[in-house]
Length: 155
Image 1 (cartoon, rainbow, N blue to C red):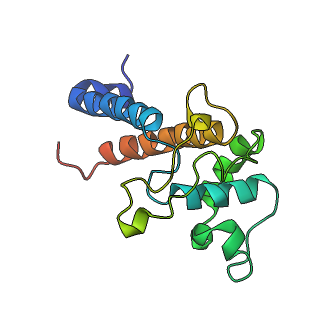
Image 2: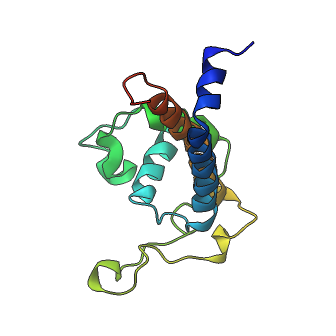
Image 3: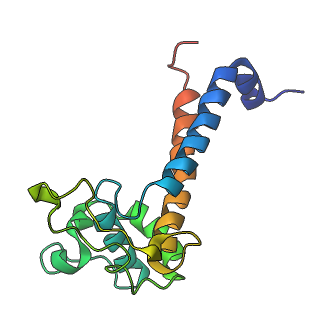
């Protein structure tokens, strides 16, 4: 006996193909993109790490310098990632991929310099960044599933 969800997936094989492609591409993206090179990834990671260290929600005025410019974002996503990052040593956060001071002045395409510390097998901050990326993938995947199974989409 088929359930409503099973019937939807059988009748939408292209949806399955798209979701599988998404999972493959998300995994490839996670593994191939250097640490902190995703848009504002360093600032997002600072915010997650702030919460992972148990400092509570940052003050928008007082903590902007230490908690990053993303602290104005709603905290739920960051709070969901914080427990995963909390169990990993992140003291090398600024040295695993130091900022490229010449990036905005035409000195290369990378926002950060990349060191051997971020190579596989991942450890410390590099591991925390990749883990946070992997933890984010299922939430994006479920959003795609919810969008694709909404009744207002043409069938």
